[in-house]
Length: 621
Image (tube, rainbow, N blue to C red):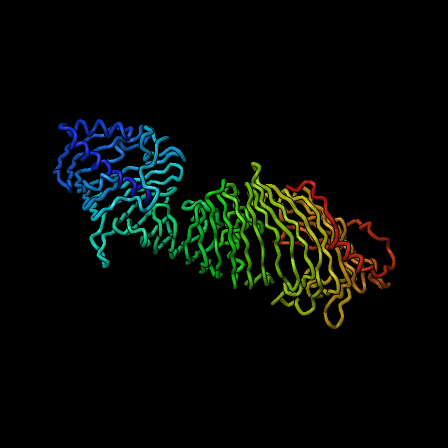
């Protein structure tokens, strides 16, 4: 709207210059065209010019045309069917402008932008790349206008940098309840291929000059299904400063805001947020907002600093009740359909839009006080994400889950052609029981898990990153039990083959356990797998193929006391994650331990070594 106001005043300025020329020359039209063309650096045509001199001089002009730049589509940047300007002569002596009345009929303004320094509204530069904006720097510099009437105005604005093309009506509305006329604009067009509509209403020109009073504005912007509405005042509408505006935004996903304000936000469920909009210099703030995103509440403040290159966003966000499914967009999932239909498997093949990480830098803190995750025992979530020159770093990242904690960091790096992602997590005191909540195994299953894992993957989708993953990990458990029903679910022979003894409580007691993993090219290899039960020592070896989403693991048992089933066959579990198979026998014995009686393992040493294990991260990006 700043450019629109600038050229409304520009038309008035042309008429004022024409009035001065009218006093000095007889051939008003020809001489006026020449002087205005030289002043603007553009060809100016005047169809008719008439003047009624006096202490308040009235200028009538018809058929005014101002040539456009050679690269813009429209032939003329400004045309005016006819206009009338009444100007007081005496204030001109002191350099002041007072217009009792201005009437503009059929003004047409065509604005265009093809780059940061390539705009058609700068005067004196010919092609729009030089010259200056003909608009006051201060609100108090605006001329005094008693009454402004705009009839049948037309405005077009094309911005190639934003793929924005809008056209609409420009007019003034007769006095409102306060007795003031208001300036209105109604624009329709497209923004990056989506329909866009803007309805704007501002205070009168009289209100614009009253520097001791805030200037009222009211607008609504619709882009596709996204709606942004604002109502309030500006202390300085010229500098867009002193903002006191209530802002409301709603739409199907926060990601759709990107074409409007260039802030990269994730895909989310439908949202609705209300808060206060403020501005200090180049810093915009959306403060004390609250609302909902999907089934989650969200509140906090967001700051956008356009003075930095690239722009910088800082935010503090809080959700008192967070539906974990509403965070799906952060890992590339469709919030409406967490399991993509285009592919069978557990890892999504949705492309990760990493290019947006180059749009601006960010520092966002998020806290989920209470997390609602029906299929995951997550209780609380907290993280800080910093985006710097194309790399997003989640650090610290922590959550309370299954009565324990997971903490560490994760990163998404788009500084190279193909993005990469890595996670470095430590988990402590996780209970197995909450993961089996509601199942028939929960009563006889337990234990606490500890460990540390580091993985790095490269790819344009989550499944590609998993298929290229490399890294290491250790997982340990103590004081646990596994339900005999779980083993029976795979077949009674499995229990016998592993010499597992089920007591009256139908649970197999586990003193401690540990699995060490090494990942290369998307395959997790089990370097060591040990499960120490009260009656047997289970050892395992195998691999998990993350790319093909399948596994092949062999398990053998070493009895601690002699029994008739001491020499039972090994067990093999294999197949895709979604449809595994189990077989018994037919495999070579595992070389971890010699046959014979086995002693209890030193569980304290086994677990502490797993938690404190340091990994080689030379390949970390």
